[in-house]
Amino acid sequence: MDWLLILLIAVLATISVFMIRSAMTSGQYNTDFALRQTLFYLLGFLMVFVLTFIPVKWLKQYIWLIYTTGVLSLVILFIAPVSPITPIINGAKSWYQFGFFSIQPSEIVKIIYILTLAYVINQHNKYKMTNDLSADIKLLIKIAATSILPMLLILFQNDLGTTLVMLAILFGMIIVSGISWWLIVPTLIAAVTIGGSLILGIIYRPDILERYLGIYPYQFERIYSWLRPEEYVAEGGFQLSNSLKAIGSGGIDGKGFGDGIIYIPENHTDFIFTIIGEEFGFIGATAVIVLIFMLMLHLFRIATVVDDSFSSYFIIGYLSMLMFHVFQNIGMTVQLLPITGLPLPFISYGGSGLWANMLAIGIIMSIYFHQYDKKA
Image 1: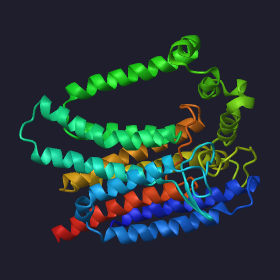
Image 2: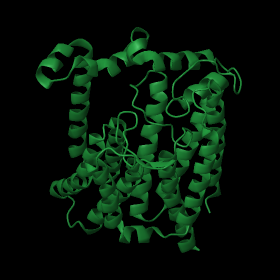
Image 3: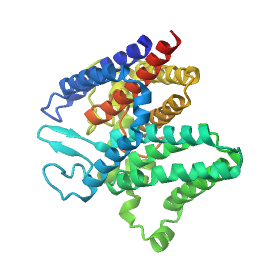
Image 4: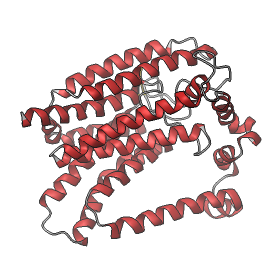
């Protein structure tokens, strides 16, 4: 068993529950989210335990059935009318609701997507006869065919954040897929150029974007409230403005557990890092970042020592997802990046997001366990 991995997740779980408990002192809700998160973690650890003993080769055998099931869960959500089972929550129809229990399928689909891409890349490299540009283009076509449907379905849910996560996964896995840099670099330059041009256009010439792309002025609000939150407190900058105040007021060592006073909506979910920064200051925030970095470093080490390419691709894909989540979540709380609603992995409250991460950890535990068992 990979006891170090279990220890790192257990420490993150403890931080999560205590920080969510502290967030509840603001009185936003009457629900005990800390207790719920504890239950989510218990179910998550049970999932990890079960998955540890399931060989990864079984997942490879049924990969297209798993992929089809994941895509169908998104298709049904897309075509189903609004109902108690498929409600609109926070402006998006992204959840299945079963009484007190709800699940966001796109979170699980992210892990299924990583598994499928790992399988596609592994199979292509296993059987490719030549190592030339045509082989790389064929692999890109296969990757695009695997990616386009789930990405579009998630984007149609009005979930830009998850779509960006999937793009980060895609980019990370393409880098390690063996595709020539003569294809990767021009594509990356084109993407950065288009993205940078849009942001500059929003800042300096929004009239051009309104005229030629049909974008409405209110759709620029998120960018403006990110760049100048103090001027857009009433529209969309309230959360970011207070996040900066909270983290800044924490100073070096913070105000102490449960002593945070700055009100931030939904601070137990996407903005949990503000609680850490306010109550434990620079030292506490740095400790959490270092802990997450230790987890990433450990996962990367596993990816480099396993002798199964499929397993390495999966771990790298999950690392790409994890890094993007962490960078985006912490970045948005300190105004480095726009707010996208992505949670901080293993720490923010939420069942679906946590279970998706625990699902990935369970698969990695299986990779580690059966690698050791095979060598023994």
